[in-house]
Image 1: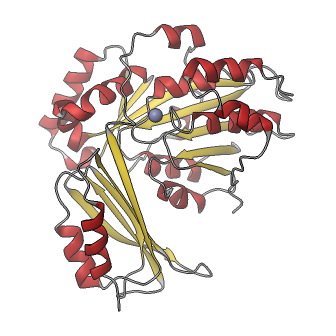
Image 2: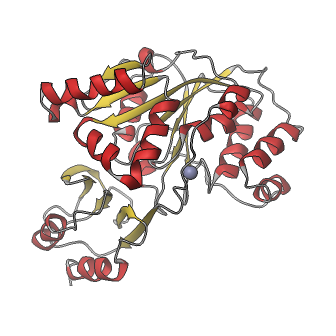
Image 3: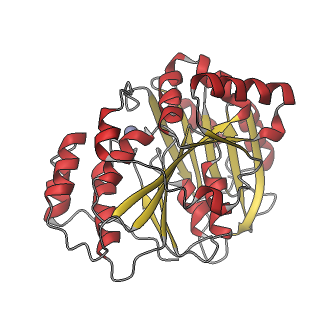
Length: 351
Ligand SMILES: [Zn+2]
C-alpha cells in the first residue's frame, strides 16, 4: 500500500491553482513544458462516472481483481472530505492516487491535471489508468482535462446508473440535469443493480435510453461484474475540440450538493447505530462509512446507503490499523442538519 499523498508545495501546483477555470486549466496543461517521457497519446485512460451510489467503486474493484495482465493505475475521487472509496480500493491495488476534498471536474481539477502530468512523467508508465469520478462530476469536464495531457489517450467514458433509482434521478430536479449530462458523455452506459428491479422496470430503462441516448452501448450488470476487456480498450474517438463543442448544459453541482463527514475513535453500540441507520432522514441521497461496532470489534463494518436502500456488511480485519469509524453523508445543499446528525451519532457511541 503506497497511496500517494499530494503536497501543495511546488510552483506548478501554485500556477495551476491560480487557474481554476476550465479554459485556464487546459491552457496551463498545454503551456507547461512537461518532460512527458511517454510518447504522445500512448497511455489509455478510462473514465468511470455516474451519480452518487451508482456502484462505481464495486465495478472498479472488480476490474482490479481481473486486470487481464495489465498494470493499472487508479485515481479515485470522492466528493466528501473523507475518501471512503479510496479506502475500499486501496486493498485491491498498490497503485492508487486519491483526489480528496472536492470534485475532480471542478474543485480539485488542478490536482487532477497535476496528477496526470506526474503519471506521464514516470519512468515506467501503467498499461491503463482508470479514473473513478465523484458521483457529482461531469465526465465531459473530466474528459477535457484528460485530453489536454499530451501523453494520455482517452480510451472511453463509462457511465454507471443504478437501475433502482434511475427514474428517481430523472424526476428529481436537483439531480436530473447532471444525471443526463453523465449519460450524454458516455461511450458505454452500464445499468447496474439489475437484480434489484423487475424485468418490466429494466425494459423501461432500456427503452428510455434507446429513445433519449440512442446509439450508445448498454450493459446490464450485477455487482459490477463485467469482463475487463469490455470496459478497457474501448478506443472510443474523443478529441478536445469535440468535447468543448458539445453543447452540454453544465450544472453547478458545487452549489447543488453538500457532504458532511464525521470520524470517531470510539466504537459504536450495535443496537444504537442500527437504530440511527434505520431512522436516517429520507432526503439523504447517499451515505457511506467504515465503522467499528461493539458486536465485532476486530472487523471493519462497511455501511452503504443509496436513496432508501442501505446495507451494513462485515469486511476485513482492522489489523494493525487503529480503528477509526468514518462516515460521509451527501444530500442537497442546505438540507443536512450537521449538528443533529453529530448528536445522534455521538449518542450511539460506546461510553
Ligand atoms: Zn465537479
